Every structure is written in structure tokens, then in C-alpha cells.
Length: 400
Image (cartoon, rainbow, N blue to C red):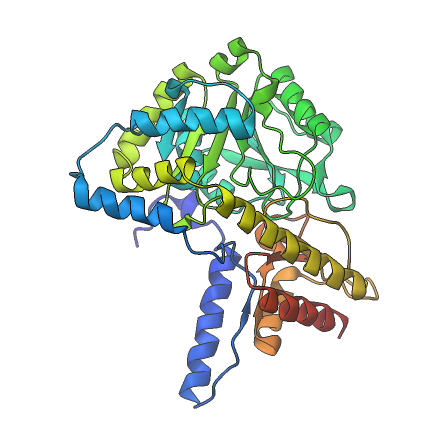
């Protein structure tokens, strides 16, 4: 039996995918029995509950009607990259040129291109634990190995820089940071970002900064590590920053993101993008341009809604005595489902049991790393009603 590359084939199935399959199977079985299950509380997927704003959709339609959909530059059309220069200055606080930017197939594609351009077989990459599950999958595809560094749930899921030192080997080539974080919602303060950058300098590592939730901040300030670089350091390519339109503008299915780095490194990244997908559709790039130039009140509306849902969740957790921390960004929170007597409980089994017993889906913490194996992740992108029902069910089920 031909299975392709063994190390990729052997990777565990991502729990979020598994849970969705189990939920669909449950609903099919109920239908076959002639039963109607009540609507589930779907809290496992980070899918914005908003439709892509109308002015963005209209721009795509106008492009279809008025433009010929040809091949385009692998790095993206100049007019979009010029707009991104303005966005990076306005939102992220550092100066770049269009030549520092390339467009990818979502933030996922931008990260994959950056990893393919920089690390390979035998290399080690420090990855936060817990982390977005795709990091390990992408590293496996690039041939590199992920080495987890723990985030501390008792200190708002921030890293301990001293513990990072013990993980460095001669094979370490990169450290990945993600703020605001998925799955934790943690927002790294300036001191942590500065320490991570100093750590990368000290060990001559790439620092890949996943900033896909950069405009989803409830408290504090989003700090892009590139703001701490001199122009020379920016050009040297140590820091690679990745962004997306998916979360800020509810454009997950449009698949458009972008990567920012020094121009020499960018040449390599663009070669990877060219080999991977040739170019991103002009139609989607026109929609992205409309997102940047159109009204931004849609961003504030979504952010305010997620914050209200965050507050709802935090208050419920306090009421049930399960509050641990307050997420300050993104739209997730991790809930500790340890039994009241302190006995260990695996988040994955808890999530499966919760689905079968309460018709509520959550993402098992074990799917994000070992540190969060006793937790489940709740997405604040669901409706207020789903969140209230779901969080109550989680707390009651955890206490049963």
C-alpha cells in the first residue's frame, strides 16, 4: 500500500475535524431513528458568525463583471501590496515597502510559504504549547520538527523565556510566536515580545510572528515584533510577520493572507508561492482591496461583539467557579474541565462525552498541545445563545 511520506501519514488527525465528523454522524443516526435533535451549540470552530461585509462582496462581483481573470504576479498585484503598506503602518506600526510583502492563500498559505522558504529536514522549530494545530502539520510537510515550548495557564498563557533557553539545540532554526493567540486568546505584552525577539537574536533564529488576529484586541495593545527592529534588521529577514483577511473581515473562505519580511528573504518566499499556487485570484485581491479602503466600522462591530461574548463567557465561568483567566484578544477561551476532586480528565474524552450527552461541540485541548490536555477550547465566534447554553452545559457536565 502506497501512503506517501510516512512522517506525514503518521500525524494524528486534528481533533476539530474528528469532532465535526462525530457530530454529523450523531445527527444522521438520530434522523434515521426518526428523531429530531435540538440545534447543537457549535463552539469548536473559529469561524466568524458574520457574513463578509457587502462592500467587499460587491468588489468581487464588479471584478468578475469588468475584468479579465488572468494570471497575476506570484507576490500579488502591486495595487494591493501598496494598500497593505498603509495598513501595516496604521495597524501594526512599522514601515515597509511593497517589495516586503507577498500575498498567500490565507494566513495558512502565507505561513506554509514562509516555513518552506526557511526550514527543512533536520531543523527544529520552537512552537508554543498550546498552539494552532496546523503548525505541526506544516512543519512536517516542510521536513522540520516542532519542539513545543510551554505557555503558562496560571499567568494568562504567557511563555517563560528562561525555560526556552533549555530547548535550544544546534538544530534550532526558528521560534514561532502567536499573539493574539489561538487557542488561548492571550495577548503578549511588550516585555514578552521584546524578550522573544532578544531570544531570537541571541540564538540567531528566525522569529515567525503569526498575527492573524491583530485587529481582534479587547484590552491592551497588539505589539508586532517588527516594530522593535531597526531598518537594517528588518531587511536582514530575521522577523517574518504573517497576517490574514480571514478574521478581521470575516473572509475565511476567500483564502487570502500575506507575509511580510526582508526583500532578499521575500524573493525566496515568492519562489515558493510561485511553485505552490502561481498567484491568488484577482477577484479575491479586489475584494481584499475593498476591505482595506472601505468603511472599517464592520471591524469594530465584530470586535465589540466578540468582546461581549468574551465577557458573557468569563462571567459564566466565574458563576460556576471555573474561571482561570481572561482572554484579551482573538475569539477563543480555554476552559479547565478538571474534576472537582482534582482527578485528571482528558479534554478529548470530555469533548466526545459532552457532544453525545449535551449536544455541544468544543475543541479538545489535547489537539493544541500537552499543556492544555485538561482543557477544552470554546470559540466566541458562535452566537450569544449558543455560547450561554454551551458554557453552562460544559460547567454542569464537568461537575457531574
